[in-house]
Image 1: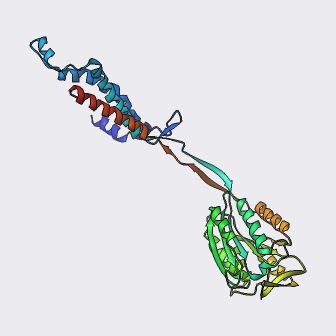
Image 2 (image 1 turned 90 degrees about the horizontal axis):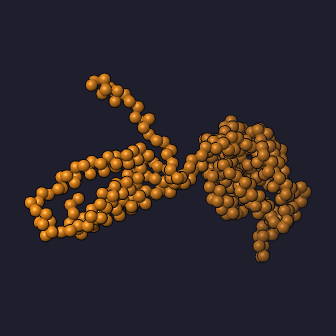
Length: 351
């Protein structure tokens, strides 16, 4: 006896679990509960042998029965089937049937990207006719975001200061809406490239991905901020962050806003000044690259090149939500039980 108790204690009951049981496309969250269905035939056999014998009432003469109620034989035979149907419904409902759920592990390519966009007043220059620099930049940045699938994207706006508009996220509609809302004049004017890099690096340094990138888009020279751009780039490189710098603007002269007049902004043709040496040093020191975008088409091509350069394999999981089906067998069980009780009450038959 002691040996049998020891065997029961040491038995691995997990072998009785049925993982992933699926019947006609229906999955069960607790499939082991379905073992209780095996007991229903045993219950029927026991009820047939014992319950009817216990309910038998002796009479001295058969004529006495004529004075009592006359339950129809069909009702009496239906009662155990209703009870069995109710129990079956309750057992299936307890097993929690559901359909449509799936969790797939897939290998995909993902990057953590911080987009740093210059919104200084010089971005209103109209050398990207028929649009100005900021509108073209927003359009191309949005197209770049729309090409993401598993990448986490953040948005930093900068001019004389830098401000995170959207932290790293895969909620691309939120990023797109934030890009649409970028406007010149939202921040103090100027071009603080070092501050922009430092702000983006803070967002990226704790990101879990192996590939972390800053895409820096500017059209000017560093003239504001307390952080030296080269120092900020070296700090970013220490965290494994690459910087891809984009200088936006044509070469030579461009129509640049210089103030406000009676009819809005007043423009003058002035030479385009982009510190390409600085942007190149920033990119190279972090392991990235520098690009010059002289028109809208070139800017689009640059984003396509960046997209091709930065790829790393990550594992992600895609989920499809369960459609719970337990309500149907539960409803069947309740209806069967209610019908049984109604028949018992109507015909005066004891349960």
